[in-house]
Length: 249
Length: 199
Figure 1: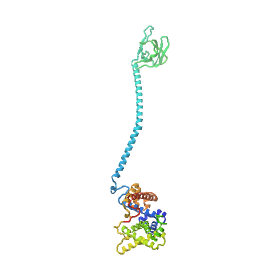
Figure 2 (figure 1 turned 60 degrees about the horizontal axis):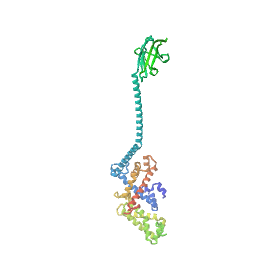
Figure 3 (figure 1 turned 90 degrees about the horizontal axis):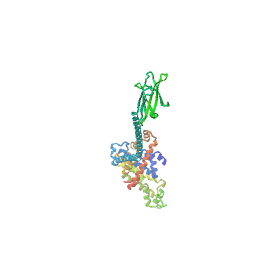
Figure 4 (figure 1 turned 135 degrees about the vertical axis):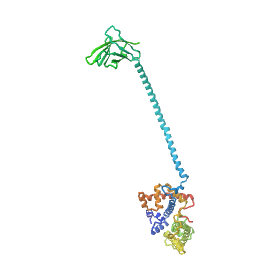
Protein backbone atom coordinates (compact mmCIF):
# COMPACT_ATOMS: atom_id res chain seq x y z
CA UNK A 1 0.00 0.00 0.00
CA UNK A 2 1.43 3.34 -1.05
CA UNK A 3 1.13 6.68 0.71
CA UNK A 4 -0.59 8.06 -2.36
CA UNK A 5 -3.33 5.45 -2.04
CA UNK A 6 -3.64 6.07 1.68
CA UNK A 7 -4.13 9.80 1.17
CA UNK A 8 -6.32 9.58 -1.92
CA UNK A 9 -8.63 6.89 -0.62
CA UNK A 10 -8.78 8.28 2.92
CA UNK A 11 -7.60 4.91 4.15
CA UNK A 12 -6.72 6.12 7.66
CA UNK A 13 -10.12 7.65 8.33
CA UNK A 14 -11.92 4.67 6.87
CA UNK A 15 -9.78 2.33 8.95
CA UNK A 16 -10.67 4.16 12.13
CA UNK A 17 -14.35 4.08 11.20
CA UNK A 18 -14.22 0.37 10.26
CA UNK A 19 -15.12 1.08 6.65
CA UNK A 20 -12.31 -0.89 4.98
CA UNK A 21 -12.65 -4.32 3.47
CA UNK A 22 -10.78 -7.14 5.20
CA UNK A 23 -8.09 -7.04 2.54
CA UNK A 24 -7.69 -3.26 2.74
CA UNK A 25 -7.57 -3.41 6.50
CA UNK A 26 -4.87 -6.09 6.54
CA UNK A 27 -2.82 -4.22 3.95
CA UNK A 28 -3.00 -1.00 5.90
CA UNK A 29 -2.06 -2.65 9.19
CA UNK A 30 0.97 -4.20 7.54
CA UNK A 31 1.83 -0.77 6.19
CA UNK A 32 1.62 1.20 9.43
CA UNK A 33 3.54 -1.47 11.32
CA UNK A 34 6.47 -0.50 9.17
CA UNK A 35 5.61 3.20 8.77
CA UNK A 36 5.85 5.45 11.82
CA UNK A 37 4.49 8.44 9.89
CA UNK A 38 1.21 6.71 9.01
CA UNK A 39 0.93 5.28 12.51
CA UNK A 40 1.26 8.76 13.99
CA UNK A 41 -1.48 10.01 11.62
CA UNK A 42 -3.60 7.05 12.62
CA UNK A 43 -3.27 7.86 16.31
CA UNK A 44 -4.22 11.49 15.74
CA UNK A 45 -7.15 10.53 13.54
CA UNK A 46 -8.39 8.10 16.20
CA UNK A 47 -8.40 10.88 18.77
CA UNK A 48 -9.85 13.42 16.34
CA UNK A 49 -12.82 11.22 15.48
CA UNK A 50 -13.30 10.16 19.11
CA UNK A 51 -13.30 13.83 20.09
CA UNK A 52 -15.77 14.78 17.35
CA UNK A 53 -18.06 11.93 18.34
CA UNK A 54 -17.98 13.14 21.92
CA UNK A 55 -18.53 16.75 20.78
CA UNK A 56 -21.52 15.63 18.72
CA UNK A 57 -23.01 13.92 21.74
CA UNK A 58 -22.58 17.10 23.75
CA UNK A 59 -24.10 19.33 21.04
CA UNK A 60 -20.87 21.21 20.40
CA UNK A 61 -21.08 20.53 16.67
CA UNK A 62 -24.43 22.26 16.26
CA UNK A 63 -24.11 25.43 14.21
CA UNK A 64 -26.81 27.05 16.38
CA UNK A 65 -26.02 25.77 19.87
CA UNK A 66 -29.10 24.52 21.66
CA UNK A 67 -29.94 24.87 25.30
CA UNK A 68 -28.16 21.60 25.97
CA UNK A 69 -24.95 23.24 24.84
CA UNK A 70 -25.55 26.17 27.15
CA UNK A 71 -23.18 24.95 29.87
CA UNK A 72 -20.33 25.55 27.47
CA UNK A 73 -21.11 29.25 27.70
CA UNK A 74 -19.08 30.41 30.65
CA UNK A 75 -18.58 33.90 32.00
CA UNK A 76 -15.64 34.31 29.70
CA UNK A 77 -17.56 33.23 26.64
CA UNK A 78 -20.03 36.13 26.89
CA UNK A 79 -17.90 38.59 28.79
CA UNK A 80 -15.34 38.66 26.01
CA UNK A 81 -17.80 39.50 23.19
CA UNK A 82 -19.51 42.03 25.42
CA UNK A 83 -16.21 43.64 26.33
CA UNK A 84 -15.08 43.55 22.72
CA UNK A 85 -18.33 45.18 21.56
CA UNK A 86 -18.19 47.92 24.17
CA UNK A 87 -14.51 48.48 23.37
CA UNK A 88 -15.34 48.86 19.71
CA UNK A 89 -18.06 51.39 20.52
CA UNK A 90 -15.68 53.32 22.78
CA UNK A 91 -13.00 53.39 20.11
CA UNK A 92 -15.53 54.52 17.52
CA UNK A 93 -16.75 57.31 19.80
CA UNK A 94 -13.19 58.38 20.49
CA UNK A 95 -12.48 58.50 16.77
CA UNK A 96 -15.61 60.57 16.13
CA UNK A 97 -14.80 62.91 19.03
CA UNK A 98 -11.22 63.30 17.84
CA UNK A 99 -12.32 63.94 14.31
CA UNK A 100 -14.82 66.52 15.53
CA UNK A 101 -12.30 68.20 17.82
CA UNK A 102 -9.37 68.35 15.45
CA UNK A 103 -11.01 68.62 12.06
CA UNK A 104 -14.66 69.56 12.29
CA UNK A 105 -14.41 72.17 15.06
CA UNK A 106 -11.70 74.35 13.41
CA UNK A 107 -13.61 74.15 10.16
CA UNK A 108 -16.84 75.16 11.87
CA UNK A 109 -14.99 77.91 13.71
CA UNK A 110 -13.64 79.25 10.41
CA UNK A 111 -17.09 79.11 8.90
CA UNK A 112 -18.53 80.88 11.92
CA UNK A 113 -15.93 83.64 11.71
CA UNK A 114 -16.57 84.01 8.03
CA UNK A 115 -20.30 84.15 8.63
CA UNK A 116 -19.80 86.74 11.37
CA UNK A 117 -17.66 88.84 9.05
CA UNK A 118 -20.26 88.56 6.31
CA UNK A 119 -23.03 89.42 8.74
CA UNK A 120 -21.11 92.49 9.94
CA UNK A 121 -20.54 93.59 6.38
CA UNK A 122 -24.19 93.03 5.60
CA UNK A 123 -25.22 94.93 8.73
CA UNK A 124 -23.00 97.80 7.68
CA UNK A 125 -24.40 97.71 4.16
CA UNK A 126 -27.93 97.63 5.53
CA UNK A 127 -27.16 100.49 7.85
CA UNK A 128 -25.72 102.47 4.95
CA UNK A 129 -28.76 101.72 2.86
CA UNK A 130 -31.00 102.67 5.75
CA UNK A 131 -29.13 105.92 6.13
CA UNK A 132 -29.50 106.54 2.43
CA UNK A 133 -33.16 105.61 2.53
CA UNK A 134 -33.65 107.78 5.55
CA UNK A 135 -31.94 110.65 3.83
CA UNK A 136 -33.99 110.05 0.70
CA UNK A 137 -37.18 109.91 2.69
CA UNK A 138 -36.18 113.04 4.55
CA UNK A 139 -35.54 114.84 1.27
CA UNK A 140 -38.74 113.51 -0.17
CA UNK A 141 -40.79 114.70 2.74
CA UNK A 142 -39.21 118.14 2.68
CA UNK A 143 -39.28 118.53 -1.07
CA UNK A 144 -40.06 122.11 -1.91
CA UNK A 145 -43.14 122.61 -4.04
CA UNK A 146 -44.40 125.57 -5.94
CA UNK A 147 -47.81 126.01 -7.52
CA UNK A 148 -47.35 127.95 -10.67
CA UNK A 149 -49.76 130.73 -11.47
CA UNK A 150 -49.92 131.69 -15.10
CA UNK A 151 -49.51 135.34 -15.95
CA UNK A 152 -49.80 137.52 -19.08
CA UNK A 153 -48.51 140.57 -17.34
CA UNK A 154 -44.80 141.03 -17.70
CA UNK A 155 -44.76 143.14 -14.58
CA UNK A 156 -46.60 140.61 -12.49
CA UNK A 157 -44.55 139.10 -9.62
CA UNK A 158 -42.93 135.73 -10.38
CA UNK A 159 -43.74 132.50 -8.58
CA UNK A 160 -41.12 132.03 -5.94
CA UNK A 161 -39.58 128.85 -4.58
CA UNK A 162 -37.07 128.50 -1.77
CA UNK A 163 -34.69 125.61 -2.19
CA UNK A 164 -33.11 124.55 1.08
CA UNK A 165 -29.47 123.42 1.08
CA UNK A 166 -30.26 119.69 1.07
CA UNK A 167 -33.05 119.89 -1.52
CA UNK A 168 -32.62 117.60 -4.50
CA UNK A 169 -35.74 118.46 -6.41
CA UNK A 170 -38.32 121.14 -6.82
CA UNK A 171 -41.85 119.98 -7.48
CA UNK A 172 -43.90 122.06 -9.87
CA UNK A 173 -47.64 121.90 -9.55
CA UNK A 174 -49.39 123.32 -12.59
CA UNK A 175 -53.11 123.80 -13.02
CA UNK A 176 -53.79 122.84 -16.61
CA UNK A 177 -56.10 125.17 -18.52
CA UNK A 178 -56.85 123.16 -21.66
CA UNK A 179 -59.11 120.20 -20.96
CA UNK A 180 -58.86 118.55 -24.43
CA UNK A 181 -55.12 118.07 -24.27
CA UNK A 182 -53.88 114.62 -23.30
CA UNK A 183 -50.14 115.21 -22.98
CA UNK A 184 -48.13 118.31 -22.33
CA UNK A 185 -44.64 119.67 -22.72
CA UNK A 186 -42.96 121.82 -20.10
CA UNK A 187 -39.89 123.85 -21.14
CA UNK A 188 -37.73 125.70 -18.60
CA UNK A 189 -35.45 128.54 -19.73
CA UNK A 190 -33.33 131.06 -17.98
CA UNK A 191 -34.29 134.64 -18.08
CA UNK A 192 -31.98 135.21 -21.04
CA UNK A 193 -33.60 132.27 -22.95
CA UNK A 194 -31.04 129.58 -22.35
CA UNK A 195 -32.75 126.19 -22.13
CA UNK A 196 -32.51 124.48 -18.74
CA UNK A 197 -34.70 121.44 -19.11
CA UNK A 198 -37.57 120.19 -21.26
CA UNK A 199 -40.08 117.61 -20.01
CA UNK A 200 -42.26 115.83 -22.59
CA UNK A 201 -45.33 113.58 -22.44
CA UNK A 202 -46.60 114.90 -19.15
CA UNK A 203 -50.09 113.81 -18.19
CA UNK A 204 -52.62 115.08 -15.67
CA UNK A 205 -52.71 113.51 -12.28
CA UNK A 206 -55.83 112.49 -10.40
CA UNK A 207 -56.41 116.15 -9.47
CA UNK A 208 -56.39 117.23 -13.11
CA UNK A 209 -53.09 119.04 -12.66
CA UNK A 210 -49.55 118.41 -13.78
CA UNK A 211 -47.07 117.51 -11.08
CA UNK A 212 -43.46 117.15 -12.01
CA UNK A 213 -40.13 117.63 -10.37
CA UNK A 214 -37.08 119.49 -11.56
CA UNK A 215 -33.51 118.73 -10.45
CA UNK A 216 -32.56 121.33 -7.86
CA UNK A 217 -28.99 121.35 -9.12
CA UNK A 218 -30.16 122.92 -12.38
CA UNK A 219 -32.11 125.62 -10.64
CA UNK A 220 -29.64 128.19 -9.51
CA UNK A 221 -30.93 131.28 -7.72
CA UNK A 222 -32.52 133.64 -10.19
CA UNK A 223 -35.55 133.90 -12.47
CA UNK A 224 -36.71 131.27 -14.99
CA UNK A 225 -39.32 131.12 -17.70
CA UNK A 226 -41.51 128.07 -17.90
CA UNK A 227 -43.59 127.46 -21.01
CA UNK A 228 -46.41 124.92 -21.04
CA UNK A 229 -47.46 123.61 -24.44
CA UNK A 230 -50.14 121.19 -25.61
CA UNK A 231 -48.50 118.09 -27.13
CA UNK A 232 -51.28 115.63 -27.96
CA UNK A 233 -53.43 115.83 -29.86
CA UNK A 234 -51.63 118.02 -32.39
CA UNK A 235 -51.10 120.69 -33.29
CA UNK A 236 -48.76 121.72 -30.56
CA UNK A 237 -49.51 125.12 -29.12
CA UNK A 238 -48.36 127.28 -26.28
CA UNK A 239 -50.91 127.13 -23.49
CA UNK A 240 -49.38 129.20 -20.72
CA UNK A 241 -46.17 130.86 -19.56
CA UNK A 242 -44.94 131.18 -15.98
CA UNK A 243 -42.23 133.03 -14.12
CA UNK A 244 -40.30 131.30 -11.42
CA UNK A 245 -37.81 132.82 -9.04
CA UNK A 246 -35.50 130.51 -7.17
CA UNK A 247 -34.06 131.52 -3.88
CA UNK A 248 -31.65 129.65 -1.71
CA UNK A 249 -31.41 130.57 1.93
CA UNK B 1 27.13 -0.41 13.47
CA UNK B 2 26.52 -0.32 17.17
CA UNK B 3 23.66 1.14 19.11
CA UNK B 4 25.84 4.03 20.31
CA UNK B 5 26.62 5.03 16.74
CA UNK B 6 23.00 4.80 15.58
CA UNK B 7 20.39 5.46 18.27
CA UNK B 8 17.54 4.71 15.86
CA UNK B 9 18.52 1.18 14.97
CA UNK B 10 17.24 -0.57 11.92
CA UNK B 11 15.30 -3.80 12.23
CA UNK B 12 18.28 -5.74 10.88
CA UNK B 13 20.57 -4.25 13.51
CA UNK B 14 18.08 -4.91 16.31
CA UNK B 15 17.63 -8.51 15.23
CA UNK B 16 21.38 -9.03 15.00
CA UNK B 17 21.97 -7.50 18.43
CA UNK B 18 19.25 -9.62 20.03
CA UNK B 19 20.73 -12.72 18.48
CA UNK B 20 24.10 -11.65 19.90
CA UNK B 21 22.58 -11.60 23.37
CA UNK B 22 22.32 -7.87 23.88
CA UNK B 23 19.34 -7.26 26.16
CA UNK B 24 19.28 -3.55 25.26
CA UNK B 25 18.29 -4.55 21.73
CA UNK B 26 15.26 -6.37 23.11
CA UNK B 27 14.21 -3.15 24.86
CA UNK B 28 14.78 -1.29 21.62
CA UNK B 29 12.53 -3.69 19.76
CA UNK B 30 9.85 -3.27 22.41
CA UNK B 31 10.04 0.55 22.28
CA UNK B 32 9.79 0.50 18.51
CA UNK B 33 6.76 -1.76 18.14
CA UNK B 34 4.99 -1.75 21.49
CA UNK B 35 2.62 1.10 20.63
CA UNK B 36 1.55 -0.54 17.37
CA UNK B 37 0.96 -3.93 18.94
CA UNK B 38 -0.92 -2.38 21.82
CA UNK B 39 -3.00 -0.27 19.46
CA UNK B 40 -4.13 -3.23 17.36
CA UNK B 41 -4.81 -5.29 20.49
CA UNK B 42 -6.79 -2.52 22.11
CA UNK B 43 -8.75 -1.86 18.95
CA UNK B 44 -9.69 -5.50 18.60
CA UNK B 45 -10.30 -6.41 22.22
CA UNK B 46 -11.65 -3.03 23.40
CA UNK B 47 -10.08 -3.78 26.73
CA UNK B 48 -6.91 -2.25 28.09
CA UNK B 49 -6.37 -5.29 30.28
CA UNK B 50 -6.59 -7.69 27.33
CA UNK B 51 -4.44 -5.37 25.23
CA UNK B 52 -1.68 -5.45 27.84
CA UNK B 53 -1.81 -9.24 27.96
CA UNK B 54 -1.78 -9.53 24.17
CA UNK B 55 1.12 -7.10 23.97
CA UNK B 56 3.22 -9.02 26.47
CA UNK B 57 2.45 -12.40 24.88
CA UNK B 58 3.22 -11.09 21.39
CA UNK B 59 6.67 -9.75 22.29
CA UNK B 60 7.52 -12.91 24.19
CA UNK B 61 6.81 -14.99 21.09
CA UNK B 62 8.60 -12.58 18.74
CA UNK B 63 11.72 -12.50 20.89
CA UNK B 64 11.77 -16.30 21.12
CA UNK B 65 11.67 -16.57 17.34
CA UNK B 66 14.46 -13.99 16.94
CA UNK B 67 16.66 -15.60 19.60
CA UNK B 68 16.24 -18.97 17.95
CA UNK B 69 17.11 -17.30 14.67
CA UNK B 70 13.90 -18.59 13.12
CA UNK B 71 12.99 -15.23 11.56
CA UNK B 72 13.11 -15.77 7.79
CA UNK B 73 13.85 -12.14 6.86
CA UNK B 74 14.55 -9.02 8.93
CA UNK B 75 12.75 -7.01 6.26
CA UNK B 76 9.60 -8.89 7.17
CA UNK B 77 9.95 -8.15 10.91
CA UNK B 78 6.99 -5.63 11.04
CA UNK B 79 4.69 -8.05 9.22
CA UNK B 80 5.86 -10.85 11.48
CA UNK B 81 5.09 -8.85 14.64
CA UNK B 82 1.64 -7.93 13.26
CA UNK B 83 0.92 -11.53 12.36
CA UNK B 84 1.96 -12.67 15.84
CA UNK B 85 -0.35 -10.05 17.37
CA UNK B 86 -3.29 -11.34 15.31
CA UNK B 87 -2.50 -14.91 16.31
CA UNK B 88 -2.43 -14.01 19.98
CA UNK B 89 -5.71 -12.15 19.65
CA UNK B 90 -7.26 -15.06 17.76
CA UNK B 91 -6.18 -17.46 20.45
CA UNK B 92 -7.57 -15.15 23.12
CA UNK B 93 -10.96 -14.99 21.45
CA UNK B 94 -10.96 -18.77 20.86
CA UNK B 95 -10.30 -19.46 24.52
CA UNK B 96 -13.05 -17.07 25.51
CA UNK B 97 -15.51 -18.72 23.15
CA UNK B 98 -14.62 -22.14 24.46
CA UNK B 99 -15.14 -20.84 27.98
CA UNK B 100 -18.52 -19.44 26.94
CA UNK B 101 -17.39 -15.81 26.98
CA UNK B 102 -18.10 -13.97 23.74
CA UNK B 103 -15.54 -11.17 23.63
CA UNK B 104 -14.98 -11.33 19.90
CA UNK B 105 -15.41 -7.78 18.55
CA UNK B 106 -18.16 -8.99 16.24
CA UNK B 107 -20.14 -10.23 19.24
CA UNK B 108 -19.01 -7.61 21.67
CA UNK B 109 -21.04 -6.83 24.74
CA UNK B 110 -22.83 -3.48 24.41
CA UNK B 111 -21.50 -2.54 27.82
CA UNK B 112 -17.98 -2.49 26.41
CA UNK B 113 -16.83 0.90 25.16
CA UNK B 114 -16.19 1.38 21.45
CA UNK B 115 -12.53 1.58 20.58
CA UNK B 116 -13.00 5.29 19.87
CA UNK B 117 -13.91 5.89 23.51
CA UNK B 118 -10.58 4.42 24.51
CA UNK B 119 -8.83 7.34 22.83
CA UNK B 120 -10.92 10.03 24.48
CA UNK B 121 -9.34 12.01 27.29
CA UNK B 122 -9.36 15.58 28.57
CA UNK B 123 -6.64 16.72 26.17
CA UNK B 124 -8.60 15.36 23.22
CA UNK B 125 -11.77 17.09 24.43
CA UNK B 126 -9.97 20.37 24.93
CA UNK B 127 -8.24 20.21 21.55
CA UNK B 128 -11.54 19.36 19.82
CA UNK B 129 -13.26 22.26 21.54
CA UNK B 130 -10.59 24.69 20.33
CA UNK B 131 -10.73 23.22 16.83
CA UNK B 132 -14.50 23.53 16.63
CA UNK B 133 -14.30 27.08 17.94
CA UNK B 134 -12.25 28.10 14.91
CA UNK B 135 -14.70 26.63 12.41
CA UNK B 136 -17.38 28.55 10.58
CA UNK B 137 -20.94 27.29 11.26
CA UNK B 138 -21.07 25.81 7.79
CA UNK B 139 -17.83 23.90 8.33
CA UNK B 140 -19.04 22.72 11.72
CA UNK B 141 -22.15 21.34 10.04
CA UNK B 142 -20.00 19.49 7.54
CA UNK B 143 -18.04 17.79 10.30
CA UNK B 144 -21.22 16.91 12.18
CA UNK B 145 -22.79 15.39 9.07
CA UNK B 146 -19.65 13.44 8.24
CA UNK B 147 -18.30 12.20 11.57
CA UNK B 148 -21.35 12.26 13.83
CA UNK B 149 -24.25 11.53 11.50
CA UNK B 150 -21.92 9.50 9.25
CA UNK B 151 -23.23 10.84 5.94
CA UNK B 152 -21.06 10.06 2.88
CA UNK B 153 -18.87 12.83 1.56
CA UNK B 154 -20.85 12.88 -1.70
CA UNK B 155 -24.12 13.47 0.15
CA UNK B 156 -22.61 16.30 2.21
CA UNK B 157 -21.19 17.92 -0.92
CA UNK B 158 -24.63 17.67 -2.56
CA UNK B 159 -26.39 19.22 0.43
CA UNK B 160 -24.01 22.17 0.57
CA UNK B 161 -23.78 22.52 -3.20
CA UNK B 162 -20.01 22.24 -3.19
CA UNK B 163 -17.41 19.94 -4.67
CA UNK B 164 -16.49 16.74 -2.88
CA UNK B 165 -12.93 17.97 -2.58
CA UNK B 166 -14.13 20.97 -0.63
CA UNK B 167 -15.57 18.72 2.07
CA UNK B 168 -12.30 16.83 2.23
CA UNK B 169 -10.41 20.09 2.54
CA UNK B 170 -12.53 21.18 5.51
CA UNK B 171 -11.90 17.84 7.20
CA UNK B 172 -8.20 18.00 6.47
CA UNK B 173 -7.82 21.52 7.87
CA UNK B 174 -9.76 20.67 11.00
CA UNK B 175 -7.64 17.56 11.55
CA UNK B 176 -4.45 19.54 11.05
CA UNK B 177 -5.50 22.14 13.59
CA UNK B 178 -6.56 19.47 16.05
CA UNK B 179 -3.18 17.81 15.67
CA UNK B 180 -1.31 21.01 16.46
CA UNK B 181 -3.44 21.82 19.48
CA UNK B 182 -3.39 18.28 20.80
CA UNK B 183 0.38 18.01 20.52
CA UNK B 184 0.76 21.29 22.34
CA UNK B 185 -1.55 20.21 25.12
CA UNK B 186 0.02 16.80 25.30
CA UNK B 187 3.47 18.30 25.58
CA UNK B 188 2.20 20.68 28.27
CA UNK B 189 0.88 17.87 30.43
CA UNK B 190 4.14 16.01 29.94
CA UNK B 191 2.56 12.81 31.09
CA UNK B 192 1.28 11.46 27.83
CA UNK B 193 2.83 10.44 24.61
CA UNK B 194 1.36 10.51 21.18
CA UNK B 195 1.33 6.77 21.00
CA UNK B 196 -1.25 4.77 22.90
CA UNK B 197 -0.31 4.14 26.49
CA UNK B 198 -0.87 0.98 28.31
CA UNK B 199 -3.23 1.02 31.25
